[in-house]
Image 1 (cartoon, one colour):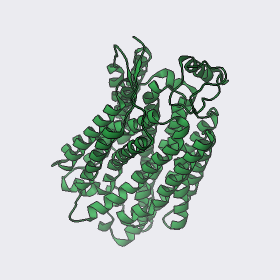
Image 2 (cartoon, helix red, strand yellow):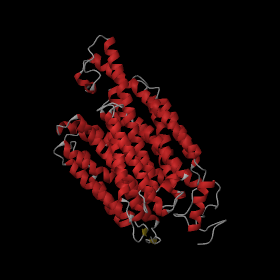
Image 3 (cartoon, helix red, strand yellow):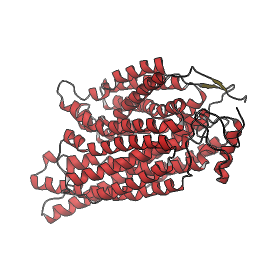
Image 4 (cartoon, helix red, strand yellow):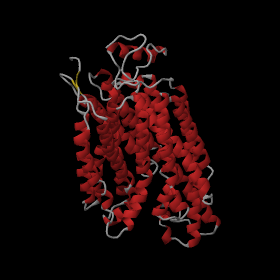
Amino acid sequence: MSAPTTTDAAPMSHRQTLEALSGLLLVLFVAMLSSTVVSIALPQIMGALNGSQIQYTWVVTATLLTATASTPIWGKLADLFSKKALIQVAIVIFVLSSAAAGLSQSAGQLIAARAVQGIGVGGLQALVQVAIAAMIPPRERGRYNGYLGGVMAVATVGGPLLGGLIVDTSWLGWRWCFYVGVPFAVVALILLQLTLHLPVFRRDNVKIDYAGAALIAAGVSLLLIWISFVDSSFAWVSWQSGAMLGGALVLLALAVRVESRAAEPIVPLAIVRERTTALAILGSLAVGMAMFGGAVFLGQYFQIGRGYSPTEAGLLTIPMMAGVLASSIIAGRLITRTGKIKPFIVLGAVVLVVGFALLSTIDHQTSLVFVGVGMFTVGVGVGMVMQNLVLAVQNTVALKDIGAASSSVAFFRSLGGTIGVSVLGAVLAHRVTDQITHDLAAAGSPTSGGGGSSSLNLGALPPAVQDIVRAAYGDATGHIFLISAAIAVIGILAAVLLKPVTLRSSLDLPDAARSTAVAADAIDGAPAFDEVTPDRTPRRGSTAS
């Protein structure tokens, strides 16, 4: 294969960079909002479409499956083709599938539309970070990653609040949970067409690794299907678990074999094996499991364990959003000023564990002030860790590999979140059922139905039973956060093992010699070159380019 050539776009002015960044952040916000805004509205949606409990689960799972499985594929395509064109394709997929979801007349149609929507969401989540990495040097990227973290925080926490407001507004209705993002995505599409100008790497005889992409997508999908339904539809130890888990492992093992031999692998193993990338993946997996697996149950804690409405529950999660927003912006600016990133990741990982430890002590009577402090602490930790792990990886790879490297970290974070939600959800359900059954028996009430799925329909239960159910959910949630804290400790270990580096001030590694030195540096641990100066002039040990 011939060497890659670069088609340089005209340099983007500061104003164009800010305008393009606005479009990227807007479309990322809309993509993430599409996953969180629906959560509050799902009971009304499935009731209107006469959906079953299994279909209820698949409305969420379908999007998660396709988004997670497609993330590394989008990232690799960004290394081979125009990043701008791929972002536009992802936006179009998202807009059309969102409209189709809003127009759905049955649960099956909604699930299909949500699966397609997940492909667009996966592309946008991966490609936005790739585009920012192609626009802004790593050292300057710290401050912009703060804005990125803030957008993700607002979308994650504000989504349920917006969903509650939409379904509570009679002249809107649940379909607007899908329509609401469409006009903003169209605005972002137009804005990016006018302002986003990125270099395109042209390669002759490009061979897309279709076999690797298919095996990765199939293996991850089967794994996520198993995680989504284990302990609810079948037991952990059952033939279904053996078939799904075993099949997923076989498919992923075949994917590794194919990737190791492919000319253009979807997930370059040489990058994944590099120390910084491997540790960032481990840290992202742990943070994803702890953050998504724990935070997803806060809404349930406030609504069922404390008796607040969906809108009130959304408002009560604001401290976490504030923590993420403040820490991501402040840490981002400090990283840009100092060029150091490891201290902030280590500190953030420690703060995250402390926050989960605080929340592990809550029950159904805990002061809301204390709960707010715990959520704020968790938010601060997330804001300092999540995006900066991606930045640490982006600093170690050449611009031509930035897509595969960035999407690999995002992929494992999403996978960790999926695993965390499923496993911690199973633990929560088990503890809640046991406690409800025990307390009903102690109170002399019949246990049939109290501990099952009908326990969520509190309005249909007698007041005394409602109190038992609320106490069970409120008390069991603390145990979930204790497990989250234990998982997050792995993130501390990964952060401590990261190699201290100074973020480079250039968009790309200056020359082939420097690329070779960076690769050698990853092996022997001794830096061969000093940092590139802001005017892109190589220092000691480098040759002028």
